[in-house]
Image (cartoon, rainbow, N blue to C red; front, side, top):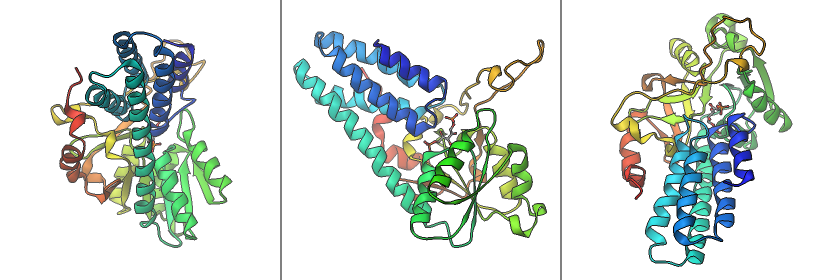
Length: 317
Ligand code: RUB
C-alpha cells in the first residue's frame, strides 16, 4: 500500500474528509492512483493488490456503504470487461470504471439538486443538520433560482460539521442561522414562536436500508421525531447507491462508534462516554427521499435498488 493511500485512510478516519459522497470520491481517486503504482506488476498481482487496497479504503469508516458499493462496482466492471485482457488493457478498464462511477455520482447530484430545490419555496425556513453535500447542493440550486429563503443549521457536536454547512452557504451569500444541537428540537417546535417556525427539513444519509429507514449524523432521529410532532416535513437527500445490501436479509446496521476524546479530550478518568457517529431515522418519519429517481417514498427503495442496481447483490469472485 502506497503512502498516499495511508494518508487517504487517515484523512477519512480523522474526518478531514467527511460525508458519504466526499469519502467515496477520495476512495475512488486513491484507488486510481494505486492502479498506476500497481501497474508495474503482473496482472494477477495487480488485481490482488488492488482488491486488498480497495477493501482497506472502503472500510476506513465502518458505516459507509456508498464507498463499499463504489469499490464493488469497480471490481464487477473489471470482472466483466477485463476478462482475458492484458495488464495494460486491464488498467485502462480500471480507470474507465472509476471515471464512470464518479460521473454517475456527479450526475445524480445534479438530479437530486434539481428535484430537491423544487421543494423549497419563497420565504421558507429551511432546517438542516450536520454537513451533507447533497443537502448543500439542493439549497444552492434553490438559491440560484432566486428563491428568497432562510437556512437554519445545527453546529453538530462533537466535531462541528454544521460549521462547514454554515461557512459554505455564507460564502454564497445565503441567510444562515445556527443553533447548538440541544436547541434544535425547541427551534423546530411551535413553542419557539411564529417567527421561527421551520417549514421543511433536509438531512443527508450515510446508509439507506431496504425498508427505507435511513442512517445519518447522530441527532437526526430526534430532529425527525420533533418534526413529525410539529408536522414539519423531513426529506432525505441521497443517492440510492447508499443502500446497504445486507439490510435485505438482516435488520441491524452497526453504527460507527468514535473516540471518546472527540467529546471531551481531557475528560475525567472513570467517566464513560458513548460517541455514536450516527443514528437511525425510521421510514415512518420520512416524508420523502430526494434521490436520482426524483422524490420517492421510503417504501419504494427496495424495488428501485433491485431493479437498477442488481450488481450490488452479486458477489465478486
Ligand atoms: C456526515 C453525514 C452526512 C452524510 C451525507 O457525517 O452524516 O449527512 O454523510 O453526506 P460525518 P453527503 O461528518 O460523520 O461523515 O450528502 O455529502 O453524501
